Image (tube, rainbow, N blue to C red; front, side, top):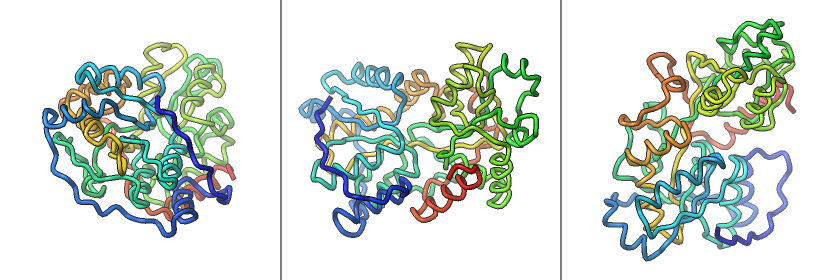
Length: 363
């Protein structure tokens, strides 16, 4: 692992959201936010990059992939391309953007590749910390994701949000199986489910599915039903497995499905229709210190073989037509995706997050 020495963070108001924090951070350190203007270079085939990538020897990957998935993904790449080692720095979704901006502001260009949700990636594009790169194999994007700027469309996987619940606790509490989000607004579920107050992409998905006013009214009804506020997606599923609370309303579908196979008596889940869905991107960092290795890694993880590896290792959803996704998680003919907004201004993001948290009585 690379030894990264970070400059101190500037003084930033504590209540800034992640999106506005990026803008404030860059402005406090280096004037107005910059935008990336680099032209999109033509894609190269792996054999054109491999010799130079081996000379570079390594690639540093900043990622929001789960800890227990990262090593297996790396092992698959290094088996395919021996001589190019991958170091991974696992960061939470709220930490990765500020880490990247802080480093680059201090003149430290450590990261080669980043993977993160489309919303923070777009903010990173806006402040000039990424470089456009178009891979040789690009899965067809749904219309809702085609607003992503050219050169920043590497959707490495899709996150869906499902209602996870504990069958044993459900039976013990004489509760009905929750099939829809509206089910958890009933008095029977009062105080017996959790919700992630930072899941802005889930709220955006509701807005795209039913319109702003109806989505806000639904979230307010949930907030008035005394939900527990989850500290993280992982913790919410751990708590449900333990039976307290009985359900989590916006759990990650891929993880709920994996746990349901391991402990079916303590974990099950329901997909809603429409199904809140969000793209996660794999992009090239600005001034990547190992550019050939970085491009080789992005090319591989976005290729048909790499996409199937992502599915096999993590149970994430791939948009590749050849990928064999878990059909209990992803089947658009059964559950229409309700996409989050991949291109969103910092002001809009901040407004929606504040509105969402206020509706949940989380602020």
